[in-house]
Image 1 (tube, helix red, strand yellow):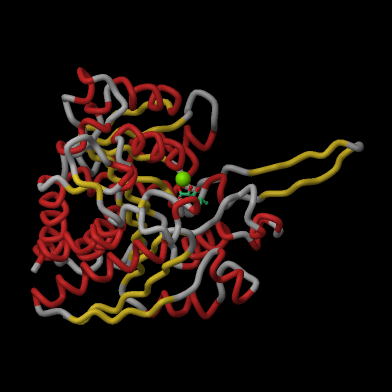
Image 2: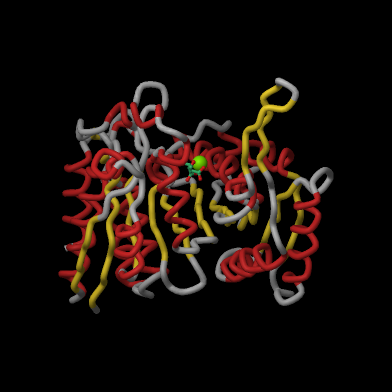
Length: 361
Ligand code: IPM
Ligand code: MG
């Protein structure tokens, strides 16, 4: 099979981790007889430095012409980088929001799994972590507060800022369908998270999710308020299978969920539209403090490449091979600095790539 992939190395540690993911993909291609065709585009700070804007129309067109997009990370240090002196619509993050919208990537899948091998890094009490957990946050990605009308005005000498949280029922329905579809392939439970005790948008969310649930009698649905969900994630994460939620709540809860795994450097994500097309990226950020030092953990990006093979190309066997190689490297005791523990061997980004490639061949 010929796979046309657009890569966005991006900023910070992005270029190093994407380089390792490409090597792993190449190893898979060689073993299973596929051919990978990569085209790089600039986004975020890297694009600002060259084009003065975080995302160009040409870059969007290149991404659209591929079968899938593999991304590293974008953004820099918000207190020191000159990118953050620019107006908000020209900063690195605007590139990411722009590409999500331009490619209609409304469904953001963020799995948070406690790896047995890394259970020691979990910050929760042993009696909680020993139960293990494996959840998937299905975050709506192209609506809500992120894309509602926004402005800052001065009224009667007072500065006033307005952000708008809007959802129409079709936006809620399509993400709910994705949530239930994936729950069906997992533990068949959806926890829909909202703030229906306060927000109209949440009351509509709840009503539409109930309607969609009727088509999935085999999937259990429960509703949970977002503040309670934040608490339950640290109290009893094992209760969750699929968490279905709007954009902003999903942004916050997915950081919390990944932190309780103790290994954010391991967590992949996929952003999908209603075709097979998707953008795949690690859940972590660009870590500018360790960029270019060969210290970054490439595993989240490598696992994102695995998600790409699974969701965009239906190459399950190949994706399984990547997941198994990652697990084997951990079992063999190799760790990057972020997941290091006593008795293991610490390796850099490149070496971690080598070790995973070796286990695929
Ligand atoms: C994420 C990030 C982005 C978001 C930022 C960089 C705009 O935090 O992907 O979770 O808020 O969506
Ligand atoms: Mg975030």
